[in-house]
Length: 159
Image (tube, rainbow, N blue to C red; front, side, top):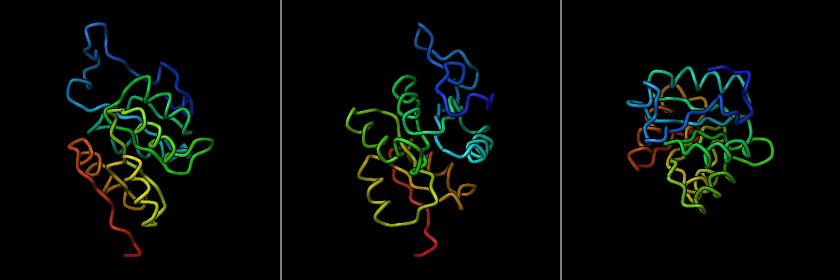
């Protein structure tokens, strides 16, 4: 994926179903569509690399407003959101999606390990909470659990 569009919701960074409702891309037939939002470009690249063999990353964005716009426009199966982003937080994005009855599943990927934040994320409709330090081992399992409608929370270092 071209990273020059990171931070924007350029239509070149996303893929929509065709007129017949089918996605035209070969990955789309077998892989779930994911939007990733994080304000750090190296983290976006790391997540994209981790997911490349298991999911179809339809967009990489660097703020909450772009995440919300992309999710509403392209309706990915799942969104991976950082909590702390410029403008609109990932938590605010999840709350808005919940209020709109969005079908997109949410997994948070964050450095934060506070149990009250985990509770707020789950209350906002998220099904996954992954600590960035455990991303390599926990992100894909959390995403798969969320897609199955089950909750996944990383083991916290302070527990």
